[in-house]
Image (cartoon, rainbow, N blue to C red; front, side, top):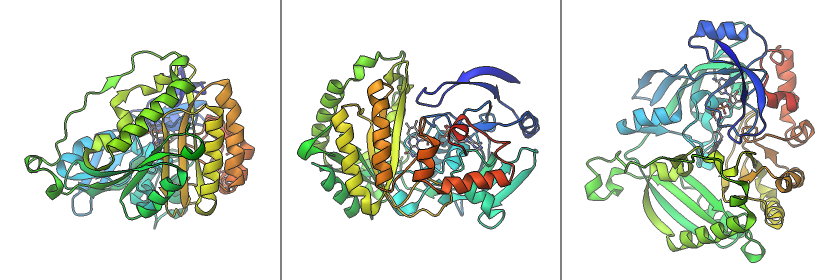
Length: 443
Ligand SMILES: Cc1cc2nc3c(=O)[nH]c(=O)nc-3n(C[C@H](O)[C@H](O)[C@H](O)COP(=O)(O)OP(=O)(O)OC[C@H]3O[C@@H](n4cnc5c(N)ncnc54)[C@H](O)[C@@H]3O)c2cc1C
């Protein structure tokens, strides 16, 4: 039932030896938890080491959808059900997740534990805003139902608590009614950072907003971006021939990257050339268009195993949030440092965050910048510099993307985490639930 293996997160770095269990029911899960400190794992889409520990418990066998109430849109499902499975079952019936990250291959447990955000945080908040209750198993095998009304403290620390409060067994979340599987997208080319941030502010009423940002552009073009606003299309927005089957979108061929690409494929010159071409193409195609839900929400899901793009050594993601007031200056400094180093990749994303009330979740009102870096000496040397700029501008880092931050940086940027560690200690949770990340960060 338990085997010794090596596991990583999506970035394939760092690598950890672990005992891996994959229980099939609650009795087997309770038994696995009696073996000592453990951490739950969903689909392993967190980039770093948050879903691997000395003992890792895969929750993939907890994959049943239990109940759906069409009056409220409430879905009760087990923690191992993925957003992809939810969309497959519910989009044809007119429902879509309220909040989704940039991949649909995440589990309900992983989405709750990281309290993930989508392109609509500025107006609608994070995944937790649409989570009604959670059933959580403790190390003693007892299951506690927690919600805003019952065991509220446990509920609030579980949303964003990165699996460190117990194992999420099942949860009730709410889905959004939609009239089609299409998005009305408006692309706004922004020749520089100021224009991009202005476009976000002007687009605060849009349900979705996100920008692809050219992190290697410099000088007057620093921060040039394609800002994409989106709304779920009503049936009446579709061309007449699509109205009879509004949820049907063209099937997309999923391709897979069969091999690790050699590191030199993604060098600064190739990334710079790609970015320039992508921005030019985006400018040409700017304006309003109808795009299918997969293209708008999950462009990367079309390439299975794209994490092999960065070669065998793996990669890391840098994601910070910056407060609204210092955000512009902070982003400018970050982009100058990244463009100056030539180390960034073409996968760089900027979003606007709105209010967030939580003792542990990542978002804060302001902006979030996320970008991938191949694991090279050059990018590793750049990271402490980016950490410092983020710290100096009152920002913080996303644990679901972190693979290398120091405990000192975490506490300096996010003092709430010292309270979280003390909260865990006081309840005996530190000795029961631990990941490689929680140990590295002193959580
Ligand atoms: C291409 C890509 C795009 C992404 N875009 C976004 C984005 O836009 N916004 C965003 O917020 N995130 C984003 N992410 C990150 C991703 O959404 C989160 O890391 C999410 O937690 C992954 O879910 P998972 O099921 O793979 O969980 P895992 O990676 O397996 O685990 C993540 C965390 O959840 C905990 N966990 C998992 N299951 C349980 C459970 N049953 N009980 C208790 N704890 C559990 C783990 O212990 C761990 O701490 C992206 C990731 C990728 C690869």
